[in-house]
Structure formats: C-alpha cells, structure tokens
Image (cartoon, rainbow, N blue to C red; front, top):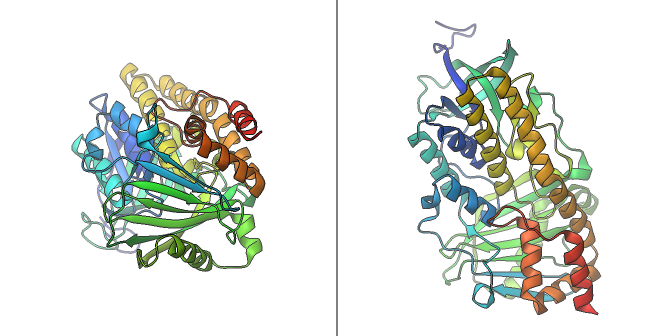
Length: 429
C-alpha cells in the first residue's frame, strides 16, 4: 500500500507503550516496564544508536542508584568513578574535594561519554524485549478513544526500505522522552519555558597526551555571563568534556557568541594546563537547557500520555544536569504503569499517570526551587567566594552542597538548604 506521495506504508503495528526518545529517560522507563516481564514497548527515536548528545557527560550518584535498582550496574563496567572535584570562584578562591579524605561516600559519579552510556541503556532495553524503532522520526500523533496513532518517517533508518518510507503504529499509552525540543510536548500543547527559566550551553570534546584522573572542575570565572560557569570533566581515560553554560538572559545581554565565550574559557584553561588539551572542534555544539524551575504538566490521564526527562524540562536550574531526573522520572512512571498493567484495569492506568505526576512534583519541586535560589545567590561573587572558602575548610559541608545540588545514591539529600547556608555563614565568621 502507498501513501499520497507514493511512499511505502508499513502495515500498522500495535504496542501497549510507545516511548518517543531512546535516551536515558525513555530507556529507563522501558526497563522499569520490562520488569513486569510482558510489556509490549516501542522505543522510537529519530537517531540511530549509538549517537552523541550535547551534555557534560556526568553520570551522578542518583543515576547510579537507579542502574542498581534495574540490574544495570554492568553499564558502568570499565569506567572510573570520579575521585576529585574542584570549584573556583570568580574572585580566585579554589577548593578541592578528594575521595581519599572523605568519611562518607563520594558525592559524585562517573564521566561517561553519552554516545557510550545512552547506547548501553538502549541496547540493554532491546535485549530485554523492547522493539527497536530508532531511525524513525515522529511526524504526527493523534489520540482517539484513548488509543494513539503515530505516523513515523524514516531518517535513514537501518530497517527502512526507502529513505522516504513512512509507517503507522498505534499504542495504548504515549510517553514523550524526546528531548528539550520535544515534539510530543508540542502535540500535548505544553509550551517551552520563557527566558526566565532557560539556559544555554556550548560543549567541545578534547584529548590530551597527559594522564588525568577521573575528576570534575567547575569554574566560575570573570568574563563569563552570570549566572553561568565553565566545566571540564575528565573521564580518567582520553575523553575530556569541556563547556560553558549560562542564563539565556545574561547571554543575550553580553552580545557575544557562544563560541566567543568558549574561547575565553579555553584561554583560562590554558593558564591551568598549558598546551595539555587538544580540541576536536567538530564536536563543538550548542544546546538549549529548559529549566525545571518551571516544568510543564507531566501526566495526561485523559489521553493516556506523559512527559519525562528533557521533554518535561527536568533540568537542574543550577547545575544544568538532567540525566538523573530523567531516569528517576522514567523509573517512577514505568514502575507505576507496570503495576497498573498487572491489574489489567484501564482506570488504574489513569491513576498511575496521576500518581506519577503527584509523586514526582512532591519529591522534586522543593529541590528544583532550592537550586534555582542557589543559582542566583552564587551569582554574587562575594557569596560565591564565601561558599567556596567554607567548603575548602569543611569537607562535610562541601559534600552537603554536592548532595543538595546533585542528589545522592539514596535519591535526594536529607539536609534542607537553609541548614547548609547557615553552616556556610557560621563557618566564615
């Protein structure tokens, strides 16, 4: 059968779950669903895997905990845990946290290239029974009678018979995990954030002939827009991830391009490691960072749909990190939907979707608000200086900040932000 343009149309296929986006959020949701043993899942993504993703490549402790819960610890095999973190303030203060000096677990995870990490999660999901529909772009989707019909177009797909091939699939439940520019979010009439809750980042990869341990550095230096910072993350092998992120309004007021800001940061790094870094300029790309300080609606029980990960704007307003939150959302949603499927009741599916949104917001809304507050507090160089000074003098305080900003292997830190800030003030008096 052929469509109006003469393109080959595939016979309709039906799935219980159509997950659009096969990154960490989407694949984690698939893994949580597959634990029930009989989930019928289509993993749809316009990219063919493995594929790169513009990111700092930091896999935090919260993500590690989810991998453990899903029996995916092997994804980390062959990678080194981060042993050190360094933070610098715009006034020149510098602190370093070393794993060998701590009396508690290191509040950091791994630096793993997303082309490796995401592909490992994806392949594991397919091995467990998810259907591989990567290389297919979602073009349209409509819901009728609580069933979704999706039109997909080949994007150079490995399984397509023609680069112009289209296919139609149906699904009972639609899950959008298709990134910051999510088509599913737009189909559900959920807008993108305004400038107040948006950041932007630029990233480039590098290598070095020198050997560096697995560690991370965050540099808030003069010349970069504020709120904003530069990062350099070392995987412990030859992979080095470098970039800058900043508030979109501050960026626009600067009237400088992201490549100019990155060049400024590279000049700073040259003063720290002269002639040590070899940049691969082909990997220099930018990415929007819609922040979780203003999330859209997450669940649509009346339409059997949900949003998770970057598609739901689940990016930390301070750190720019989104992997943990996407995976946590995928884990929560998949676990609830798997339980509702066991009960084989349509009303239970609606309840599962509603419960997911309520639970996720209850757990993370205070966390995101606190990080949004910290983002603007440390925009003031003097407070940033006090914070770095206090953390340099007290490893426990530093770990408290890291746990608050990033989460830890039990989820989120127990200490409220006001206690951490108060301790900072007392430490500096």
